Amino acid sequence: MATSDLTQEERAAIEQRIFELELEHRDLDGVIGRLVKDPTLDELQLRRLKKRKLLLKDLVIRLRARLVPDILA
Image (cartoon, rainbow, N blue to C red):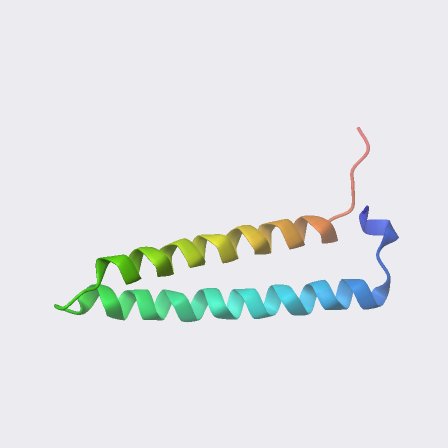
């Protein structure tokens, strides 16, 4: 779906979803920072959190791409 095909409601929904994903990404950043400092570090949990953080970043990038108009060459 091209950007021009998005309704105002769809754009608003995508922007809201981006906000939520970025918020979760920042929260995970804090959790990961605290976990790294923990002497009883759970490596598996840390890997899972880092993987989730990367997934969130990828989702935000894809959603932002939907909001950017296609440029004709």
